[in-house]
Image (tube, rainbow, N blue to C red; front, top):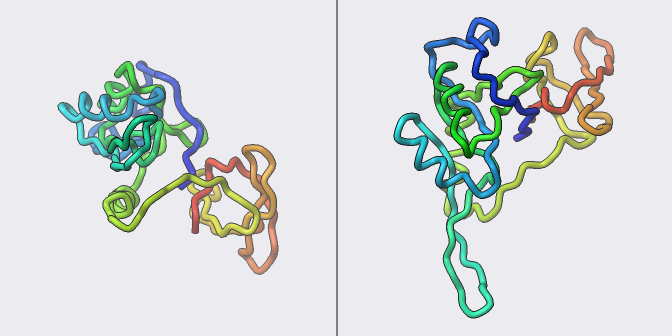
Length: 184
């Protein structure tokens, strides 16, 4: 899962300006302040549908073993909200920003959240991490005019990746922000 650029608090952004539906609830990822995920999830769950996957693990302290709860994805929380509710979530003191693609809030499909729920609920999964895009990865473009095209990553330079697109019976190499890519 590639988590893209983030959007700062934009209290005056309207749904019309952003291209998002004002009344349809969609899942969004939010960046959190460090170690604020659980408390913010409890607080926001009173008003919104929140998903903050938590795991229990045993850790060794200097004098004993202790079972602690930690988020599966440190620094992130998911909420199913409308555009207006998304702004309300951003006003929570623990929330830093909305995860964005190409500067726009990036809705997450219900199926992706469902898969994440299955993965984090499976007893045999011990660790999960977000890995960067690497050369050789098969990816799909998530946004922009090339949305839904598949390609292979040739090289990655900082936050940009060059892809080989094999459409129209020719090889075309394009360079895009890595935030616009997802595994194919």
